[in-house]
Length: 296
Image 1 (cartoon, rainbow, N blue to C red):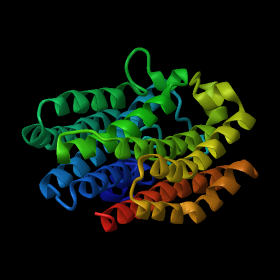
Image 2 (tube, helix red, strand yellow):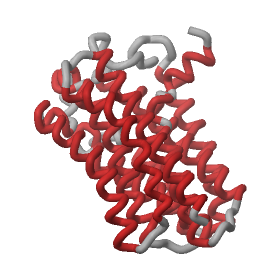
Image 3 (cartoon, helix red, strand yellow):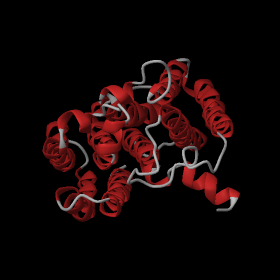
């Protein structure tokens, strides 16, 4: 592969909706709450920072999993550049820190705009990305990856994007952050469901390894169902903008990945389910954002 395509593959583009959708939803919730006001440069900084935290996390994961022997050539998932010997481990690690460096630059601007609380949020997000599979006791190897994805790509990202716009918090973004977090976590659930056997052999005790196939399937379905059931309940409780129900237009995007997860287990099908879950999150984020902006 060419150098550009190689690094594009290493960044794991199928996972990037988990970085983009929360910022879109949180910003749109802020615009709706404020009646149409928006800090455009703050939005761009939050979006770029979130994307590069995700890329840095993916590259760090690529490096650390290869070192620990979790990414072997018999895995069912897409190519990992470190374990495949396509990029030297030190270069992958350097690229990870360069990606985190971009996010730090964006964070510096956000601190200037919204205060020092953003420093703590940014530091915790980067630390969580590194320690997912790195460090002496990576939490991704102890079945806690889903908890941290839900926390950082759901609650923290959506409410953080809302906060840097208005410098306050609200119940609407908090409720929507749960739905976004469930879908972001579902991406990891599919990933770990696919890699159960190779992870087990490598001693990577993900939640899927601990729960088994049947329970992991149920968890995935519950996350998808919970995402869409929560939205109308939230809007009813908060007397929120009903145009946010446009997010339910994303439901058809759930059909393909749920069929793959509940059907025959093979690499291509589950790789498709992973991509499909990312697309589902992207569709949910776009439709929800559109609804909130129309209601502003």
